[in-house]
Length: 481
Image 1 (spheres, rainbow, N blue to C red):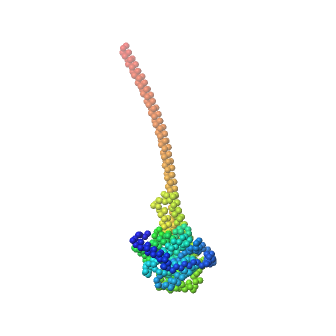
Image 2: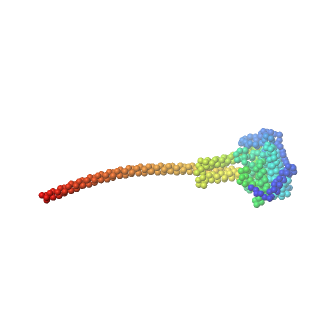
Image 3: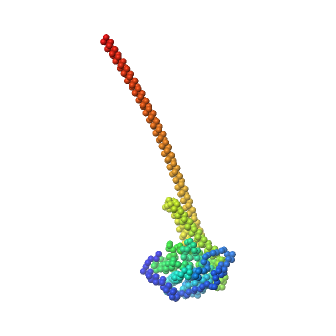
């Protein structure tokens, strides 16, 4: 996000200047060539004939909107005296391409800012794009272009049989969020050629990139407007809105960089000559000679090139990656809803493993979508993470079942032991009761026996006492006599 600054008002005025100049009609020569008299079906027959090439369907290859507005507008600029003639010839190839496909071409020939200083003048690219973009946005739907193609002046359009529209994202799923099609080389993002959607997001992107060097001067912008664009669209909330496509599709480099594996494929749409200095005019001249004198070698019919198969495979791989992300997300939701205790266990270890793999795959989609091997590995890694998570969940569920079974068994065992002890206690109580009864009975019998013995002893003593009395009485009687 850009911070506010006292410079902001002056910056807004700076951004507004090209709009005023544009509407006065003084800043550019505008090439607005409409398509020829051929109908869309005639163009289809002429360009997309099926000469034993694989079938290729891509909605909107031809510009056929209800009100006749072109889907693509071409935009570029060049000013100063260096290589004027060679750049003019390069521009001609783009204008011819626009004439064939009905693409208006806007070309800025004067600096807007910088007073001829390249370090400042490069930001004219963003200002001019913003100017054309705002002008398109003032038009009603059906009258405005849908996308803009930016091409630097050091480019040559080689193959007029390749429409820019074949690179546009399908109108489905996550692809609807894509507003910028870009490419990268060994140094990262290259702003020499890119496609940008005509929409509010793009205006905000360009505005932030224009403002960046003044409002955030601490940010190092080695490649100026290129790094400014990159800094803005690299912000987390912006990354899903741009995607990297294979650079050889629409930003192939001249063989000057052969040591880096650069080559222009057969039937290539365009060739770019970045960073070549004084070697650029000769290199551009060689390709322009081919365009002028051997066009049949360059203008290969679309279906005879590798574009259809590569483009179809590119979006197919991204669909598979997106489906994998959706499946993994659905699985996390399922686990969270049905097995929340497992989902949050071990500090969400299972969910975090999937989330880490998802993050890595999203990074690949956003930064290296053109790298099919990295994309394949990312999908496989996420698929493996989901599979491992399922195994972990199944393992935990099995462990829970085993633990529950063990608890039930322990509970049953405890209940059985309790019953056994109760029965044993009952038996002991019954035994004690019997023993107590027997002891009581024995005590009673002993008591009765003692009472009987006592009675007998008492009776015997009484008899004995009676006998003694009788003897005594007898003795007294005898004495008396």
